[in-house]
Length: 89
Image (cartoon, rainbow, N blue to C red):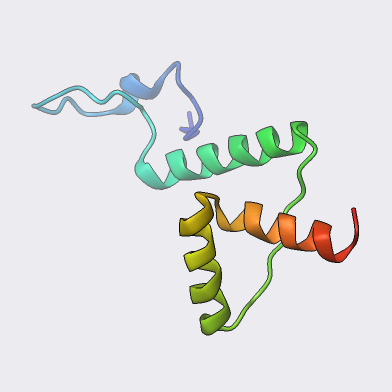
């Protein structure tokens, strides 16, 4: 019988007993991160958001971070506001 990482039912059948605090999650950290990222993408999709990846100059990022701190907003919010203003939306 093979073991699937997503299998929550039989995870303890094949794991050796270990001393210490019991694990609160049966998955290893890298698998938890993949699951969390998948769920985040699904939440964003449900909210109607789409991903956009861009590369910007470091000086521009520093200036944008200063604006973000002043306004108390995230980078995504500042970029969205700038694009809306530029596109007259």
